[in-house]
Amino acid sequence: MAAKKRAKTRRQSAAPRVENLEFVVEADEDANPEDYLFQDPEYREQDQERLDAFNRGDWRMVGVRAEVEITIAGTVQTIRTPGVWAVESDSGQSYFNDLGTQEYAELLAILAEIGIPKNRVPKASTGRWVER
Image 1 (tube, rainbow, N blue to C red):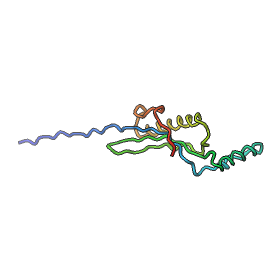
Image 2: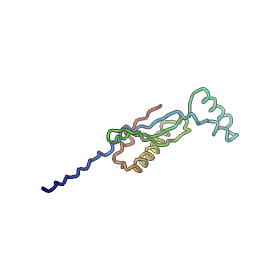
Image 3: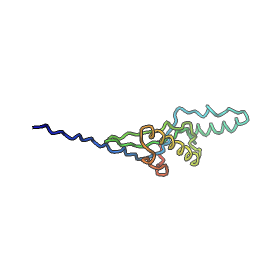
Image 4: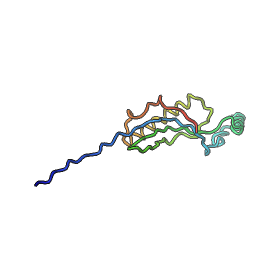
């Protein structure tokens, strides 16, 4: 009796699921406004006012990054961009939107490097802004 050949079955892995796009604003504890203030003597008074406002807690230094969750075979991983740091927290929403666009492009590049095409990534407009 001849041995039966067994059909090889190959486990089909599902494509990674990419979800929960967030633009994260978090404290930048390493930044110091004195690193860039007081560079021009003509603005010394304005720079001092700005530093006083910082010391009162009127604004702070933050970083902005984009992140998503990727689910592969039931395991969830968070992928984050390196971020842009030493941003003044009172910079205005327009500037933060520009940083979000920049970080989203960086996130797409990172995901492409690990084989995830941009059509599998949530659109930037669906991302939510969070503070941590």
